[in-house]
Structures are given as structure tokens and as C-alpha cells.
Length: 230
Length: 230
DNA sequence: TTCTTACATTGACATTTATCAATTTTATTT
DNA sequence: AAATAAAATTGATAAATGTCAATGTAAGAA
Figure 1 (cartoon, protein in one colour):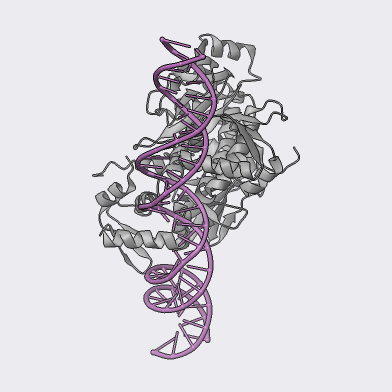
Figure 2: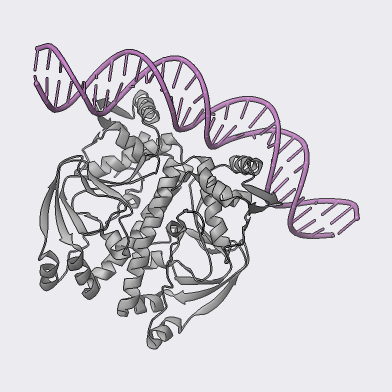
């Protein structure tokens, strides 16, 4: 990268949680594994319900979000390939604190709760890795709350475009983001109309361009500057 | 409680992390323990620095916060008695993602990094408990980000008063909050003047009263209603 | 293709929140 | 207690953001 935007502060899973397990552990873990397919827009699990297992995203994208009692969502994370979903609720022995819905068509591996817990309780490597991941996530969340608490809508919009650009592009060169405006506004934490106006400003400043709902990042450095984030 | 405000969503540590360890483990853990005293206003550790160990608050209160590059803080948590500080950075093997400063005079037990890691790596109970705590915290944070993203300053002010009331009162009956206005504004995620005006509104509505900087909760149910949180 | 529907955008305006500059109150020091 | 410093509050105003209604555009269904 030729800019100093700290993308590392935006990734929950900084390594593959389940790599490096022994063959026996892997077998126990995947003994009852199921491959599931979710069409874009389908809910994978719902806030407040009992967790049945964990999920690994094999392909596609998943949005993670919470709902207010007055009907607005807040999308706090987009999960991509090889990231895991739903393990927090299993480990905390609580209900799901959030919901997950496919953003694109997804292929997902489902591992039942008991198989996961069983391996967690016997594999030192796995529990150490989970500890590392969860505590890394803590930093990611601190960053997110700080941004919501202290940055303007303009700054947050820029920050989220930068995050999404990274998240959606396997290759760095790819600078397209496709996401509906309601979801984008829900990530930024603003009204759809305010989000659209911000995009318009960015277009006038030549930081981005659009074609339909697709957003092209035209000036990465300019967006970093607009984010006011160092 | 005679209201349905979910205080449980605001506590990081839902049990004593280190209770139930074997005598041997306890000894290893506390072999190099130091008791430290921090005067109100003194920083305990600083964002971006190398973690040296973990801290347990024995008495007093500690604010945890992150700083923006443009000089405003966001206080995201108040630690009280028997809560632990600084273990995230140790477990994630990263720099401190946040800072901690004594809000009141504090007595704190310091456990060096290696002693902690040593016991974590050998005690199954401790690592399981840490996993449970960290994943519980995830839910606490989701709630916090949702509130920052989706609730108004009025609602957030009410929510934070309710949290502080609980946090500062050992007995439920105690309904006093003493905190300077800058810190309160920093928790709510707003400007000091906006915070003060919100307090004024709440006073006019007889939800609170004040004497100097001390805030008395006069109508808990009314504040819950003002928070718009269910 | 045409119709239909969902989504995106714009305009006008109201409301909320931040900022800056006083002023008042409270706490601390002498 | 008086003097001083720090913090809290208020007022005036600007800026940011949200809301509601209308219009435009794109995508899927018939």
C-alpha cells in the first residue's frame, strides 16, 4: 500500500482459526460438518436466538449486524472468505448478540456446537488461538467505537469506503464497491439520504465515481485524507 | 430492579477471572505481584505502548479510553473493583489498543506478563474462563457500537447515566454519580456543552437533580424511558 | 420489450449538535 | 477568608445531520 490507512485495525480474523490442528482434531471437528448455501439476502442466524454451531464462510460475503428496538440496524462487520461466524455466542454460553445475513450468495460450512466445544476443550492450540483472535478483535472494536463516537459522517463514510474497498478486492488493484445504500448507511451509522449526499460530495471532489450502485474508488489518498484518520 | 434496562450488557467481567485456580497456579501467578497506588488522574498505561503485565483493580475506579489523532478521547468503559485491565494486549501480542487512567484514587495489583501467560498456557480453567469473558465482552461492545451508531445524544446521555448509576453504586439504593463533565461527554460521545444542556433538560423534567458536579438520579423509570432502550 | 417494483437521488426544511465566547460556580491555594 | 485557578454553565450562532415527500433510475418479471 502506498498510504498509511491502518487496514489491520478492521479485521477480526487475522489468521485461520482452525489451521494447524492435528488430524484427529480436524476429524472430530468436521465429523458432522455440513455445507450450506445461502442466497443473497437470506439470514444465517438471528440475534437473541440459541446458537447451534459455528460457520465458516467458504465463498461470498456476510453482513453482521445488530438491531435497535425501533427498527434500524447497525452493520458492524462484513465477513469474507475463510472467516468464522457465530463462535462468540457458543463460547460465552449466551444467545447470539448479533445477526448474520448473506450479502452475496454464500457457501458456508456449518460445525455443530458440541463438536466445536469438544475440540476447544481439548486443543490447547485452538483455545490459545481463539484467545488471540478475540483479544485482537477487542482492538478492532475499540477502533470502531471511537470512530462512531468521534468522527463526522463525512469522515466515517470515507473510512467505510476504504474498509470496503479492501474487503471486496482480493487483488489490491480492484477498486469497486457494490453495496446497496441502506446497508452502506447502516455501516456508517447515518441516514440513507445523508450517505447519498456524502457520496455526491465525494464524486464532485473526484474521490470516487459511480455507475449505478457500483462505487469506484478514484483517489485513494484523497479518501484517506477525507477520513481524517491516522 | 424494577425496570428492564439490561445492565448485564454493560459489564465486561461477569465473573472473577482468577477464582478457582489451584493453589499452585495462584502462587505462580502472584509470585511477583506488586501492589501499586495511582492517584486520581494518573495514567496506568498508554495506548500504543508495549504491555508489561495485567492489572487488577482492588479499589477505586479506572477509565478506559482511546484517543483520536485530533485530540479528543472516547471513554468506552469504567472499571471498578475486582475487574482486570490490560490482558487483551498481552493475549493478542499487540500494543495496548487503549489507555487506562485512574478516575478515583486506586489500589491495583500488578501481575507481570510472563507470570500471567505462563498460567494461561497451563491452566485449562483459566483459558476457558478468558474465552468466556472475551466473547461475552464482544456482546457488550456490539451493544455499545449500536448505541453510538443509532441513538441520539439525549438517548445516549440517559443510557450512560443509568450505566454509571449501577457502576458507582455498590448498593442499588445509591443514586449519585460524580464525574466531571468532560469525561461524561467523552463517554456519551458528544461535546461538553451538549452534554450539559442535556443534563439541564433532564433536570427540568425532574429525572435528575444536581449539587455541584454530583448528579442524583431522581426518576430511574423516567430515565429508562428517555433512553429509548429496551 | 414493457410493465412493475425496488432502489437511488434530490429538494426543502426541521432538528440536532457543535463551536466559540462569555459568565458563573466550584474547588484550590495562599 | 480572600485570591486564584479550574470547571461548569449559558447564550448566540453556525454547521451538520435527519426527515419527509417527490422524482428519477435501474433491474427483474411478465
